[in-house]
Length: 610
Image (cartoon, rainbow, N blue to C red; front, side, top):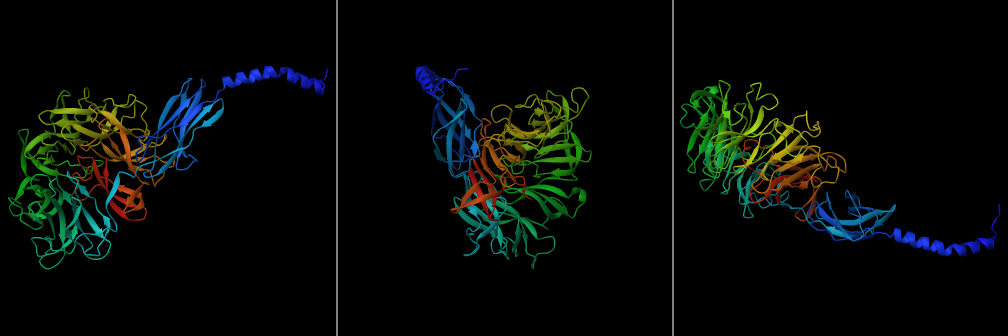
């Protein structure tokens, strides 16, 4: 074989130079790199932002995504998409799982021809959270002394005007260290304090329940008295309210029960304060037979008590006499605590009664809304196993119940549902129905519904595990008709709204349906993607279209009197002893109110404007 001499090789390179130059020019034309520009972010909220860029692929096949984070290490990224063409193309995606009040860096990253083309770094800052600490540990406790400050709080209650009431504990850790306060038009006022004189008695307050508070700025609470002179055994508790203008005693343990011969009030089980009239309450009577000791009472605005219902008493239900064996009024209802169920704006009282023949009925005052054996329209099946109703603004109820099986039209596969009753009893949704927002899954079990106004409802449900790819990890969800028809709001095992790709809903706890927007709920998120026990509980809210947003989560920072504090725990719509059946945590203007505990062991009552 001939070997090229050195000078011959050089001559060959010279000779071939035009060819290589042409090839290089052709390759350069074929692989013109993409033009990449990161643009300013838009729609920046506390927890997400829309990220923008412009990409000109110059005819190449490209894949692009956004990188973002609190540093130029860009800890997070979007899902990404393919972009093609020969012109500049606008690209956008949503950056999720942001923290309030934080500076973020973002850039677009484009891959083409096995090369990476980053856009320039652009920054944006998320606004401070919509959550505002309206009363906090360390704040001055009005009326309790010049040096008194708050240490912790009970479950606050918000009214239609945006004012609120709460039970607070002082930092003194001694006697006379807790009481009831209101905050009306921004002014904090003491209503009652441990050790303070209890109106209409010769005694002093010892303890308090969490208060109830109505749209008129009136308050009521259950209190107990110090064991002192004049406080005999069986007379230490009572209900106080200011519905008559100043705080006064409404009813006291040991007091004669009007119209019930020989009976006195023994204890107070549950209580609420409608906008019309005075408190409504359920009490256990003393001095009669145990079978007729539970009773429900209303109080008018002049303080007069009226008996609504009582166990052991005969009532007419669908033209048949029945004896009441049990009453349920304002009970805690799992998953939907904190929304009014037992009364409406007009002051009408609604309760569930069970009878000695094991049947049930829901009463609105003395009228029967629904009863065991009532035939559901169109379904033509009888009601059984009625559960605690949700009350419409003025008339009617929505409730969960079962249907009597006939082996043909109603079987174990479709014998449960949510029903509406006013003049007729109709079906809202039934087990075996197609579950909207799923791939062929069917409804199985239903939680108790919540109701807004007269027609809007929301409920939690589980799916039948037989169809539609339902597993133990995706069988639960929340549905509502706020968008105009029944639709899925959130589902266990699905992508959590406002969270990075791959962060899933694990389970749901409290659910409510304010008149403003759509359902609001607490959810636990599945561990992973940076989530653990310190930051995996979120408060979510839907708008009227059913679009869900993350409002606040554990691990977020809230400014408290100028100091940034990290949320450890949120108590939104908790079960509240003695006063569980009144709306507490939201109003119709979009405000939410709840107790927050921080990692430094302090607390605050937090207001959130949606």
